[in-house]
Amino acid sequence: MQAVSLTGLSTLFVLLWSSGWVASQLAISELDIVTLLIVRYLIVFAALLLLVSLFGYWRRMSLSEVLQQMLVGSLMHGIYLMAALSAFEAGVSAGLVAFIMTLHPMLTATLSSRVNGEEVSARQWQGLLIGTLAIVLSVSDSYRHGASGAALVLPFLAVLALTVGSLLNRHLELCHKARAERPQPVLLILLLQSTGALLVLLPMRDANIPIHFSHFQSGEWMLLLWLALGVSLGSYAILQLLLRRISTTRVASLGYLIPPATMVQAYLVFGDSLSVVDMAGLTLAAIGVYCVMTPEGSRTATPTDSTEGLPRIAMTDSMRLPLTVPVRPLAASTARLDIEL
Image (cartoon, rainbow, N blue to C red; front, side, top):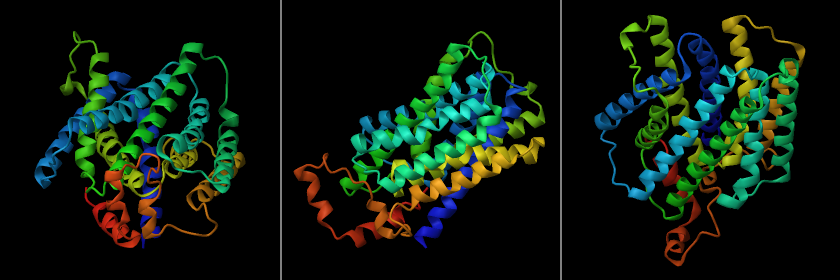
């Protein structure tokens, strides 16, 4: 049951996240990037504030954790999206951005063992390399030169922001598990993260030019609502649940499926052609992700996987006692708590 749940969450995450690129491509033609992202996250913030209040998910949190979650939001929502979408606007091809974004799983795997004490097996490294090859094949036809040096910096900035934000997010979840603490509701965490995103985005807007919401067309509102509720709220909520259950490397490996999934959706929405190379890339990406997600042969996720990646070097004497609880009861309790939104 745990394996089925993990597969379903992973699939839904890929579909929602990749749809964000297609919807953004449509929205950018109508709105400037800063306005698009600010309105998008104002909708997210309002929706989360309503949901957290409606379901009574307010919890006591230390100032340090609040600031850390806001930092995660500024990185994974604000800087990441601003840099990636600005790269498109600056003339960097979508294929080249997708290729550069494949550095995210590799960089995450490299840093995860040092930051969070999560080891990456030889089989997982093989899967990461297969995934990289898949994206190289998928974007080879769309690769082109001509973008300025400053524009090419933007996708690398997006990769760095997403990687650091993911590692910090996973680190906070591991600290909760190490102290045997009840995890904070996902919607409350997303509310703090969306606040962090707005703190990054709002200063980028010219204060002398107000946003005229009444000027938005119905089609623009539909795109904004999907980007806000379907992508920023839906996909990031699933991302939060995945980071509670599996290692950062395994979550990051799903990024190899994003460009191929985006190509399929672009084919359905815009009529873009799918070549044999694209289909081969999609197949290789699926194989690579399978290798990373099942690092021990055919072994699938079990309830004990919820304790994966507990940081060993960060343990203190005060933290050892809760961790002497047998693994199965602890995993069972966390499995129940992970469902709470």
